[in-house]
Length: 142
Image (cartoon, rainbow, N blue to C red; front, side):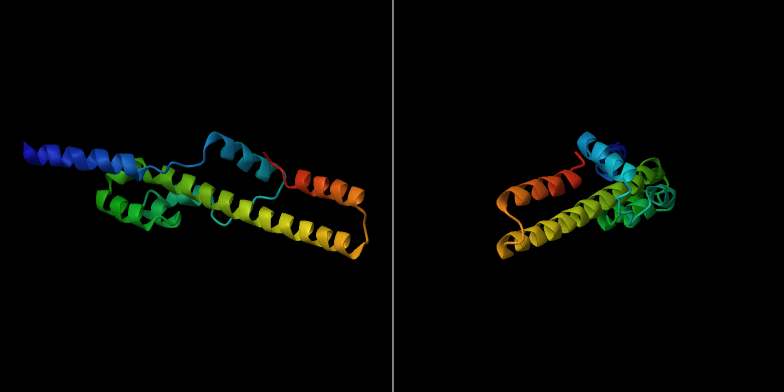
């Protein structure tokens, strides 16, 4: 009896920790906007993460979650129920984070160039404010 309850507790714990939380609804909308505007940096392919999730721990390892990968490796073949989802969601999270970082870096570079133009007297304050608004609008995908 004790062995069954221990096994059940282990299964419940692994099911609750084995599933990736993924992107929230706002992030998913933003992710789709990145995709539609062709700015999404796709370092990891979500479908590859899902396919690798069929292998023992493959989806979690692909999504850079080695701790979950080891748990899923030990829980295989039961982990096949959630690891493809973990791989898919994890790849999306990686792509989302990398895209956000790249866009922020690009925006910062454009604003820095604009700041230099203002400091050098090449543009006045009105032009600066207009150009900065355009830059912020260009990088707004929310």
